[in-house]
Each structure stands twice: as C-alpha cells, then as structure tokens.
Length: 151
Image (cartoon, rainbow, N blue to C red):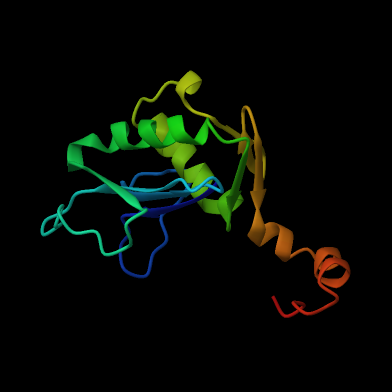
C-alpha cells in the first residue's frame, strides 16, 4: 500500500513533523489489491456528493472535529497491509502521523507506526521510503544504470 498525507500549512512553511501541531486534512491510501481510498476533513465549501477522481476511489469525509477518528480509520487500514510505500515518508508523512496521533491522544497500541532515530516503519510490517531509496547513489548506479543520477 502507498500512503500520502496532506496537512494544514501556512503559506511558505512546511509543518514540523516532530511537533505535528497542524491538522491532517487528507490521507490517501492505495493498495496493490485495488484498494483506493481518501480520507478528507470537510472544509467550508466541500461538496460531499462529487467524486471526480473515478468510480473505484472511495472518499470518506470527516467533520473538522473528527480528525482523530479519521487517523484511527487510516491506521486500521494500514495494519492490514504488510508493506507500506511512501515518498519522503521517513522525513514527513509517517513521523507527522505518528506525532499527530500522539498529540490527539491516540494510544500507542492503536498506532501501527514505529519511529526510529531517522526513519519510520510499521510495528507489523515493512516501510519503504522511495525518496530515500532512489537518492542512494549505489541504487542509482547499479539498479538503474545511472539513468537517474541527477535525482
């Protein structure tokens, strides 16, 4: 499964994943088994009846006060997959979700993420950060025959 999150932010500033003070506004989850879902915090002007993304993509809307429930629902799905793939998930997405969950009072036993010093993984699975993998020089040279060395 791949995961991507969106977070409230001030213009020109990236939220700090260690502090995780801004709301998670969307969580996108895509599985290799056809699972395709987006969790979205409803904002003013959100049209709940429209899905322009495609028939197979489920969109679940949550009221602004239900961010904790949205994250818990995403965690339940994450636990079902043995592998999670992200792009820069070690630096942002997973630490942000982990710390935001803690800030919102989600118990550690309900959080499938496990944080290490400079990376993130799953308690019962494997996390692969494609940004970290593709920026590795050996990987660029040997796996892709130097086609992506300007990464």
